[in-house]
Image 1 (cartoon, rainbow, N blue to C red):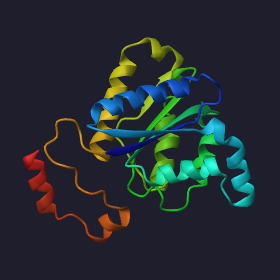
Image 2 (image 1 turned 90 degrees about the vertical axis):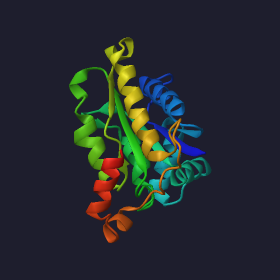
Image 3 (image 1 turned 180 degrees about the vertical axis):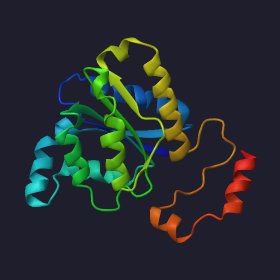
Length: 205
């Protein structure tokens, strides 16, 4: 069973960030044969995150969330936009992860904001963050302004991004074979795939 962790950085209840996270979760469930989903609501971990920064030790709920991310086959990370970037609470969670914990993990990035003026946050903030953490960011990021929730274009982007995450993280519905084991960045650089093999795979696809 494919394990997916959904990290939502919304501060209000309810929040548009959690709403987008739920849409992405539902679409990912549909794209996978079987999925075990764990939701990490950062609002509930705010005090433990601060304590961890000060003491270096996570509280029980935060420790469980970190362990869930460690065991995940894929991560959906959704943040509200504050001051043209991800929120401080969202960044703090990924700051406290130990180095290497996200190596090679597929991550779907998404963000919400009041207007479309903030849509570049996916490329100028979220992708660099997860590239630094050596995660594998899926090609399609999902940004949702307030007006987007009333349209059909958002649903199309959600389904496309969820399908890409499912393809990287686990077995896609209807697939005949299990996916190849995920390799870390060090493994890829230490044992690069021969060019002939890449050509063969491309011709088979």
